[in-house]
Image 1 (cartoon, helix red, strand yellow):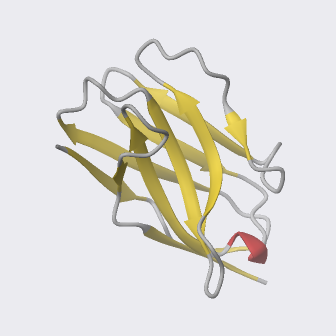
Image 2 (cartoon, helix red, strand yellow):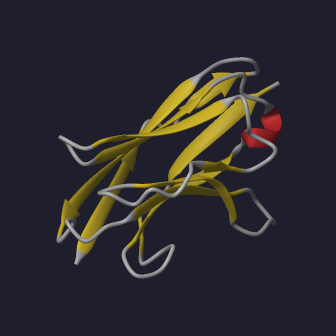
Length: 119
């Protein structure tokens, strides 16, 4: 089993920045993909960013709406994935979920962390 624990969600003003963290615990050595998803009220969950880890050479992938503003990164020494979010907009308001994949893009989900951007 793999456990994912997110942190870093907060209330921020338009144009501000936040950095989300997701610590990976448990049987984590088989993880090959780390992703961030988000779900706004009344909307479907959507992929925000994803990357390959532990030798997976897939390119970093971003939703068009966040390209140039968000950056996903991986600390291999600590098994933590980050999402740096800059130039935040009210449309970025959502619950953000960390996800880890072994044989599929997503096999495990975190509990979510709330990001609210005020106008």
